[in-house]
Length: 81
Image (tube, rainbow, N blue to C red):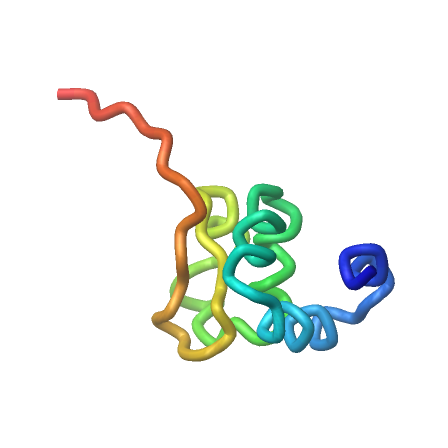
């Protein structure tokens, strides 16, 4: 039910609801780049240093706790020499 209502929430309401979710719910939701981006919209205190959109694009989402606390959903990268 909560996932249905998420689309209609403001960014602050979204972050609050996100913080109330279980880790499993968060991880299933954070597969989407758009959903990861929303975690940065409500209160990403270091936007002038690190862009939330860039973090979301790379697979990170903001935990809402501290400016330096982000999690990554998955890593798919190739290292070139």
